[in-house]
Image (tube, rainbow, N blue to C red; front, side, top):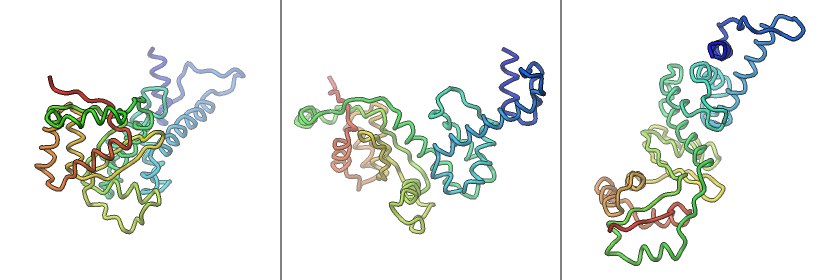
Length: 254
């Protein structure tokens, strides 16, 4: 186990020497071959981060991104074999990376991008059908005590920065010059069939969805959302959640 630990440590740290136990089949110096292998491993992990965080890459440029990603790779090696899961710690790393401090919104943009990856790979769960929804909504006297279950892909991210607009601008949906990055925004991430959607929502809508996620009943969640955001449109949000298949179950209080 110690040999394996030494190998991994040397693989991710260019300051370490090639492990002494290594040898090559033809008697050549193994250090040069190990250096090539080390470079290939680091490059593949940097490329994986570039694929997972394309908007972050565009915001800082390829050279800066790859230098930052390489520092991250050395400090945070993968914990699983699944490259799609690599990058969970990247947003927090960006937040504490001094050279990126002039872009305070960068970490939250990375959080949004990783939520999209998680949504894409989340489990499939059948949405409520029209008959089930009609049955639930036809009992208004029981709605306040009803709890709703959301699709596993559904997630909310609230930020002090314009994360939805920044993401949309880099999808060609709006001009980057129109974006005020210091404006707070709330994002709803949801996989609608095979497409992962990013939707800007009001503060009240974000609170409502988060409350449902924690198991709060419908009435309590709506009351909290309206208290902080009087313009929160519950009917509009429910229509969107229903149309995108985000509602997967419900239970009435006994």
